[in-house]
Length: 377
Image (cartoon, rainbow, N blue to C red; front, side, top):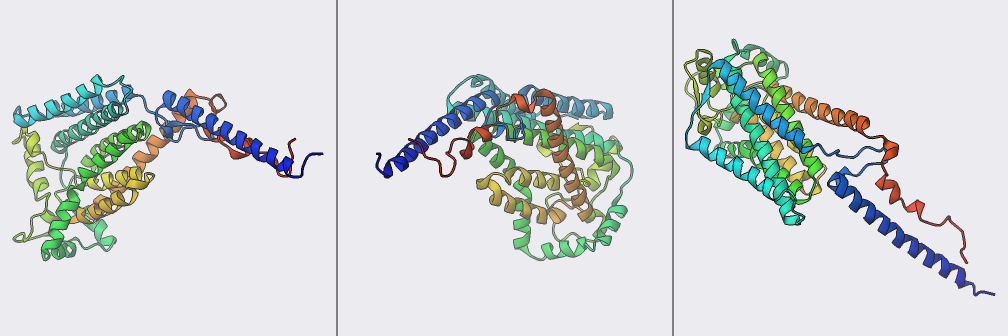
């Protein structure tokens, strides 16, 4: 007769073996799915759809080419052209260098090269989208008619937002001016942190999803811009000498009429200015940055706080109505929803859930454990 502890010893050995088998199955499944679909966030969930389906790189290249085509077509229609100077040459060299790096290390299996490859790709796509978006805002401004400041101001009053009081508070405190200008410039810092982290951790799917969402948000902003052209609250609401000139100054009041009258025909990349009042693209960007950073534990709170500070600085530094910011938030939500829904629909069309192994189910503890109370001899 076997000793009493024999059965429990056998159970312990069996559970240990099953645990080892389970770990190896999980590791093999993770490695296989990562090689096939990209980073770990592309592994299918129990529903059969990846948490972040990987968007093909060709789509992003087409997206960037389409952005350039739209910008150039609008500029040709309105008689605008980019000045050929050192800034244009510098931008061209920088983007070409990043694209060259992406091409050179495209097939490397070195983790360092893969990170460099991905970051170079993200940098080209984000910078190109941003550049073409700003360029397209100039001919878009030339096609606008009138200013809708009275409507936007009435919306602010209905929301009990007093822009003049907000501006006076900032103008009377140098510390708020410095903090506001720094926070407003965070629009350039946040994407570098997000894309750098996603490249470092190999989350290509999440990065490409962010880039497509950002691109769509730019298109939506440019499409709505002619509907709400405005010169801004500083020009419309403030009368007399200006005690504090914010970052955006009075560019909309001066540049938009000149573009409409065709007195401005050359665009200098070194002196590009934001001309879109509504929707506020700083608000659009802040919402997208927070949404993308929130699932990343290391970025969640730092970028949330940075972009909340930017949101507080937007009314004065960007000379925006609160109505501009609300429309900007709605644009960001719409872009996120469209991209998420589109990816879901495309994934359902391309793949059938039953054809894709579920990584979660392969790593389910209950699938490899013994029923409670069972004995193995």
